[in-house]
Amino acid sequence: MGSLSIWHWLIVLVIVMLVFGTKKLRNMGADLGGAVRGFKDGMREGADKSADPNTPHVSDKMVEGEVKHKTEQKA
Image 1 (cartoon, rainbow, N blue to C red):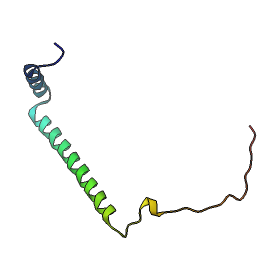
Image 2: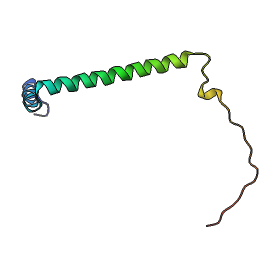
Image 3: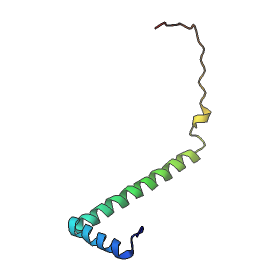
Image 4: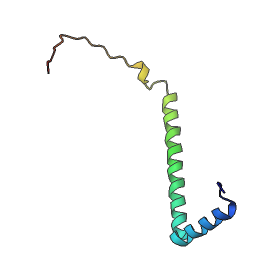
């Protein structure tokens, strides 16, 4: 009773197809696939940039400074 069988999922799929139509579902699937592909390409480009030895890394940057004076504010 707690889990749904394959027949329940098939009925839900048929109802979704009747409500949205196959063309709209196909377009949503294509959009989702394009988004996943774009994400993978972006991750691949990020990995390529980090492999470049001329690119400075965050750990390569050091900020130096000193405190001239400290002021106290009372509320």
